[in-house]
Length: 82
Image (tube, rainbow, N blue to C red; front, side, top):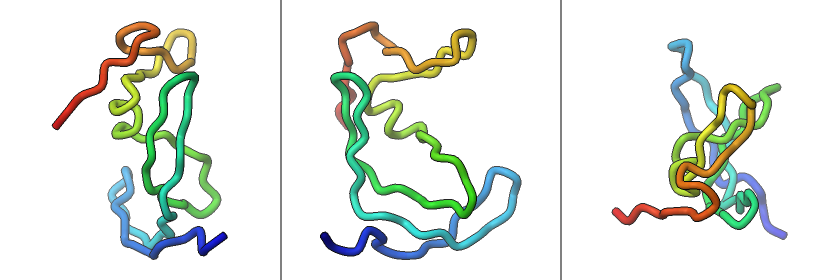
């Protein structure tokens, strides 16, 4: 197995700050029958977060009432082509 980290990059934080973080090689994310392949940003002492790009690609959204992931179009994912 090769190096997990591809590079270190500067990122903009939600609070307005900026910091250098490691970025991984491709990571396979799967939820039920849906998947996405993305690079991950590794934040020091941070919890794993699923960003908006993989969520949109997998046709998922967060149900804030039940605090869970759900399909935007039910059980059948509708993929976007760009």
